[in-house]
Image (tube, rainbow, N blue to C red; front, side, top):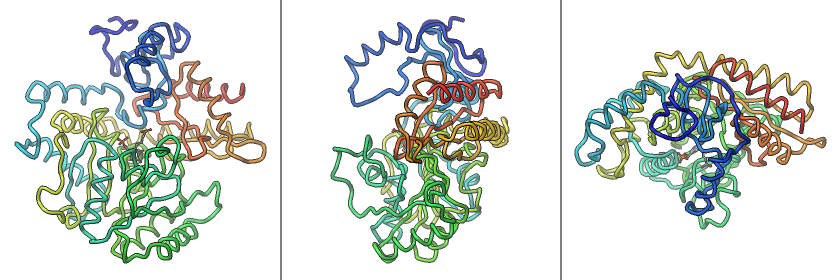
Length: 450
Ligand code: PLZ
């Protein structure tokens, strides 16, 4: 099996050698060639963070066209939770792609869509009656959740939170907080979207109850519950900086929403599917959302998203009011059913907690050695450090330098945060302890050297 060149002989998945191996500079000569082709063919507006071109991936590594084997601490932005080219997913996809590839669920339906809806209704928080609708991307799920909440309540205003991220389509750009790179120049945005203050313990020092009272005050005074259809919130923010709200914040918002006929939507696109050590992050504080938006980790890498919600809400719009050509595509739903098997059989909730404990202890050690590590936060296999300068201000330049040094050393890491000063770790749950520890020590060295 060749792993040094692109081609049919390259096989990914868990059988790939689990090692960091650099045989060229990063990016290597074959990636350089592809970078040039990319520049000549692909819109320059589509950026690439670490431009090494992948040929295979699995376990905790991504192998590039030059034969470098890189430690993956990003999971393609929290997607390949079960591991890249997971065998359950691969098998399900192969079987489905040979049976049929598409009929359109709205034209000639098929059982995989129904089975996945049954499973999602069963595994999401709350034992009330639920219904599910499937879509293609996280942003599309969010758009549909808002459409449904508006229809159900007969109201139109929507609240999202400071630092929140919900996508790049027109309505979801309006919901997303950060201007650059997501919104700048792309307006005007969808109307009747408002922003409430988030609980951000490292920066605001408020308890969950205090932060919730502040957010509720904003909603009551600036919008009014009588106009508010929905609140949408990430239980732990992703792109916005891995902000973990203070305990009590989410339950207080949920309680207020429930009391005011406001649909409480948990956007678990990034936190869902075992990432935080629970199947869904809402479970950690026994929050039962009225609706959830799910994507990323749902299907082992295939594009699929879901809105799961209370039956009376999900069934409110007229028949034919929801849909799309590809929503719940048979290959993607087969992949999702395969990935759900992988979550069960691999005991991946426990695995996320173990990986979280390793990251927590190594990152806390970095913080104790280096005052520029202002905060260590996250849950399970979703951990981050927030980097600050000597005045306690966000240090985006340092964050970029450390990330670049990690990339050059063969470790794929991502940054995030409204201020660009958060260094986030999202390893696939299939990574070994050894590789994770090696990746963390590369990060520690990169920080010390910068
Ligand atoms: N909601 C909570 O994290 C996607 C975006 C990367 P899509 N996050 C990664 C980028 O720069 O585009 C995300 C999310 C939360 C919604 C979305 C949107 O999901 O599948 O990217 O549309």
